[in-house]
Image (cartoon, rainbow, N blue to C red; front, side):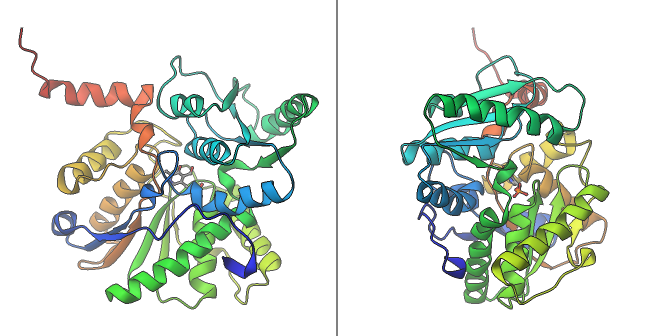
Length: 341
Ligand SMILES: Cc1ncc(COP(=O)(O)O)c(C=O)c1O
């Protein structure tokens, strides 16, 4: 509980595991923090953010959670999970096409009784389209008697980031106990809340752990401005005793591989490597891309031999079952299936 702010208790301490086979393969000392093992709705990083956000929703008397994301949003699926657990109605709004089947996160959303509202992209800025659509959908539910609590993309506001402020405190304590307090923490960056919570937590609590984010989608000047603005909001809201400028945030921009949720061979190869060496399943949108980034950072000399790395497994495995990734996996993996007639 950061800054005395009340939160739901959804997540216990998640383990940090040493990865001996990957460490040997890459020539670094690699650990993984299993935030994919958080215990509701198939797990993932968003549960930590939702501890704060849904507590706030309940305190305000909400009967319904509405959030936004892509059609296959992990954040939406976990919002649906927490809504189910606390007896709230839930809907996800996405500017996206219907993939043509009820699979992966969409299947899990619907199993947990969450509505999904999809509007095809009309080419304008996504925020502009959402700003237009969300109030209409919210009013529709409110007219039916719901009291709606709106959660922004990825749960990435000041309150949501506190979930990862707490995780930073947990990481620092665990790393000290394991004697790896000089490690570099690495995580995949989307809507930035996880990164921002970790950054503020590690710095504000005086941790010696360093933080690197690997962006999974193009990180242009707008995001450069947003990250500084986001930090300013955190500092102001929680009266943080630290300062930061853009250069203080180590965000790797070179490993986005064609954009958000794009099928990519190197990402699939990273997923195979982790699965075949350590039996840990990564996802094709976030953690697979993050790990592919780590592999490239070793190759590019951005990571020193023997360097200690704690990769945060932020979850997302249902993404393996999304149609556009599945067809690519199938092409590469079908040859190992023998059908005896
Ligand atoms: C599996 C997974 N990893 C990482 C992230 C990135 O977290 P953030 O949006 O806080 O940057 C997300 C966000 O949706 C995610 O679903």
